[in-house]
Amino acid sequence: MSAHGRQGATIEVQGLTKRFGTVVAIDDLEFTVSPGRVTGFLGPNGAGKTTTLRILLGLVAPSAGTATIGGRRYQELDHPLSQVGALLEATSFHPSRRALDHLRMVAMAAGIDQRRAGAVLDLVGLSDVANRRVAGFSLGMRQRLSLATALLGDPAVLVLDEPSNGLDPAGIAWLREFLRFLANEGRTVLVSSHLLAEMALTLDDVVIISGGTLRAQGPLSALTSRLHSVMRVRTPEPDRLVAVLEGAAIAYRRSDDGAIEIEGIEPEQLGPLLAASQVVLYELVRERSDLESLFLSLTAGAGGDATHLGGRDDRTPGAHWRPASRPRGTT
Image (tube, rainbow, N blue to C red; front, side, top):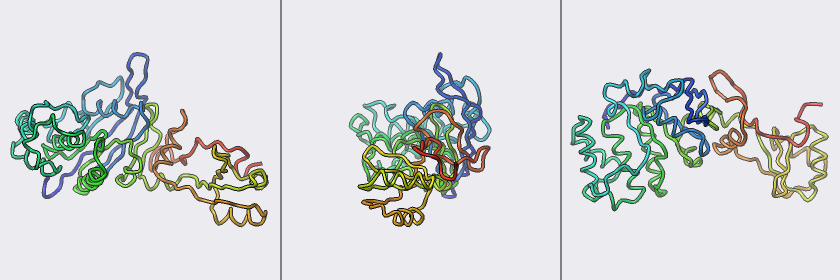
């Protein structure tokens, strides 16, 4: 990579809509990805993530709206492979071609110095298998070769769709550190993944979509800090506990395993209340406000408004909570 880093360009998606016949895959989607940060592009299967990335890379035409890199569509870039590196799948290799030869051919077609082929193989940890045929590569090795291909032009913008697919735990840890290294150089890094726990260790910002619409965007730390606090309580006296909660107008719900989940109250407040009411407890645990909680709270149901931090809507995520009694503080 560049010894002095690369200043990335801002990715902007504005009013993006894509219809396939009567199916609306993306519906008026808007978000921004900033340089120098690792941004996670998250959503359940069928949310429209891959379609959005393919539009961004000029592989699919939008029905409406724009997806630009530094204010320009991918098709308008002067030297796209040297400006944007992309990983969309790990299967687009000729099986009988050797890894080094594959990279040299891509470099030749793009007008890139072929000496970069060996350099990027070293970066992704494939130097030892440079002369092996791709047919013998595991899925994880193919992922690394795809990443090497994306890095050939020393791009300032990286767009990576499920880059950890097929990697073993050591490979995933390596990828996490590598993405951080790229962002610290000033590059723009947009990455989609279904590995939420791993992404939580990697991301600076998140963009969450569901049903083709934006559900949330902003710094991960800020979004998760705004989740409602949820306490999980197990007791041999659930009906007494419910009576106490309803008397204090505290929202709750019964979980499938018999526990009672209580929203919007801290342990320091709940503990004394239950002690004063002499409710016997087996368990009192505060659920973590993490990326998985945020993701589930925003994608569990359809509809609702998107959550933006520093954007047009600053609502608290967690709108899909359905309390079994009156919300706290209401009559």
